[in-house]
Amino acid sequence: MHPDLPRPAPGPVEAPFWEWCRRHELRLQRCSDCGTFRFHPRPRCHACTSAAADWTPVAGTGTVASYTVLYPPVLPAFADRVPYNAVVVQLDEGPFMVSNLLGVDNEDLEVGMRVAVTFVDVDDEYALPQFRPVGAEAA
Amino acid sequence: MSAPDRIDVVSGRSAIAGIGETVYGKNLGRSELDLACEAIVAACADAGFPVQEVDGIVSYHIEQVSEEAIVHALGLENCSFMARTTSGGGGAASVVGLAAVAVASGQAESVIAFRARNRSKGASYGGDPNQGGRPWEKAGRAVSGGNQWHHPFGVASPTHEMALIARRHMALFGTTAEQFGTQSVAQRFHASHNPRAIMRTPITLDDWHNARMIADPIRLVDCSLENDGATAILVTTPERARDLPQPPVTVLAQAMGAGPIHVALADYFRTSSSFDERDFAGRHIARQLFARAGCTPADVDVAAIFDHFTMAVPLSLEQYGFCGLGEGGPMIESGATRWPDGALPVNTHGGSNGEGFIHGANHVPEAVRQIRGTSTCQVAGAEVALVTGAISDPAGAVLLGRG
Image (cartoon, rainbow over all chains, first blue to last red; front, side, top):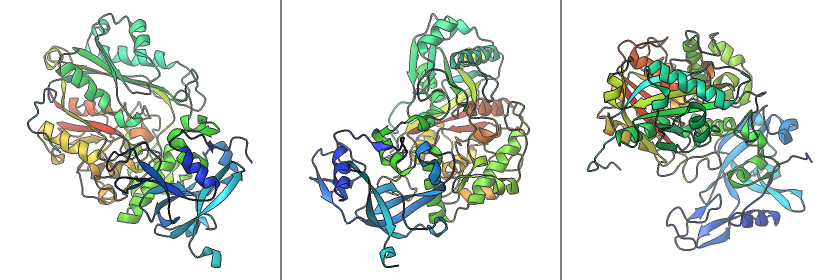
């Protein structure tokens, strides 16, 4: 592992997200009052300003809203991975997440692809929520 | 969203009397304070205005030159107003907006707005992430705040953010990367006329095609330059400006906005992705701006649009109402933004990929020159100029016009 590989240093509001990821579960904050999902984690619901929220399991499926393929300059820890992709996934529950799409050639990336979350253990303390095309496991 | 009952004491009640710029270049080997002082003194000299009568200082929130340092270096004993804008390049035009608010409301008479930067790769003064080189490369191993939602995936620089926004726009509207390239080519053409420009050699669309990819679909020549330099603008009362040698350039209106929902690097598309007014501040800003100035986008003769990447130009053209949603790319392709024949020449100094990148601050002097009639790519008879901040932040814009 690259010594400078970025790792999350979450504050108290954000820490549960990464703890659920470590357990290979994708959970998002959902407002306890109005039911609106939100990501990334925040202290208040942007729809109703309530502070009450539950860490609610989500399906982990979504659609590629956008993508890019990255070339130098990138973060030093990613220099040996170029060119690599990054995607914005819109989860079926609504929120958008930045991630990477695994198991796809860069030239096959498309907006609108259906994807499902997969957790990649970086080490014992930290797993990264990345995505694979739906149906790719059968291919 | 408009508030017609509010009394607007700002619009038309201040004027730009002077502009000052250092040389823009790579690794100038000078401190940001040194550069800032040169630009401020130059702005006052341009205005025929005594430096020590400056009584206000406005800068960007991440500006590394402190107000205290300016006051002490230039002996500004009468300083009575100091403030900073929000959100990086989003506040680029709003340094003028904030100075206009101070002057029009009587909190100060003559305010300097400035930005000084050492962002060449080899430049480093002080230890702040916002000094020297690329701040995102200095985020370190433990990433907190917004960075934790993208750095672990290798997404770190503004180029990466704007590439993701660009690709979404292309997918929704059929915008092409060549349309961004056409803006890149137009700006480099403008820069070829400008002796201040760092990149004075024009390029063709073939050159754009052959340029190195940075973050698909953004190529190297779509990116702002990484350079050093400083820009300063002197804003004073219309009365004082009329007594000074330069033709006054009136601040017709200023507006700021964070939109109903803003897009920042960590956020991307928070709850929407349609580029409508749920996503960007631009339309919210434009509505206020044109209402305050009493004009419409059709009245704008020339625009200086914040262009950290050229794909910000079509988005801004849409958000500020120069064309419909999704029509920014075709508008550029039609030649509308290219001087001299375009209906709305954009970044006639060469912009951030041609003249240089002072975080958008160098767009203001170009708009001033257009109204004065002294640009190297002069739009004949220009009377109204728009200057915008970044499209992807809480942001602001100003409209400038003849005094």
